[in-house]
Image (cartoon, rainbow, N blue to C red; front, side):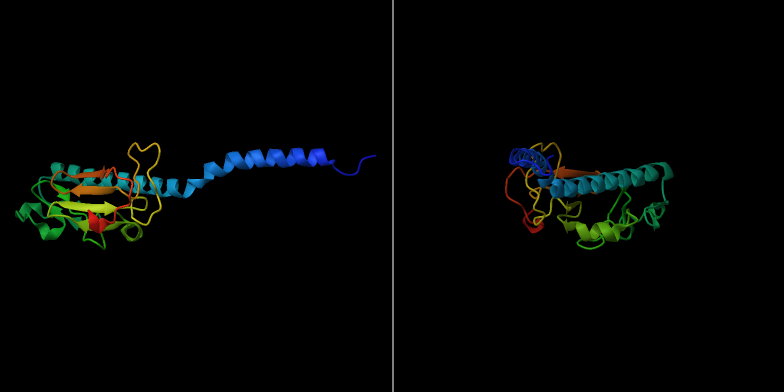
Amino acid sequence: MRKAFTLVELIFVLVIIGILAGVAIPKFTNLFSNTKISSELATASTIESAIEDVHSQWIMSEGEFNWGNDETSNCSDKDSSNDGNFNCSTGYPILGSCPNDSFKNILKNSNIVDTKWECKQKSNEIYIFKGPASKNDSSVNRPTDKKGKPDCSDYWEYNITSGTFVLKDISNQTCTDIDQI
């Protein structure tokens, strides 16, 4: 009657565990980077949808309407500056003030998002954003299947004239600080 495993059986079990570990570990190495990428893409999609929603409301209202987080367009009084919150000539919102409160006008939980995103006003019409994956210190390197996925050398550009919120690929391999853009 046998009461223990043989040395061959133990070695066989260790080899199987080693093979499983060799297959599983590479799958989990990019998990943290993929989480940052997914988070940034989901937030960017939400921002794009909110911008288009506000623009649609502007088209339908032809003047003053409520939008975002209790904002009012005030476009009926011909104030094209609209207190810095809305571009009445194009119908697109001004997201907020950089570097803090970037998304306060359109996102309900903007304080959570703003802590994870960096913002810089490039011109009167262009704002630059870097999210969890595209920030310089994100440790997200260029994905092998790039296809619209942000990495630490990319940034998002919001144009308040055209209403576009798009990922800009800086095609170099080095990470870029928002002040270098």
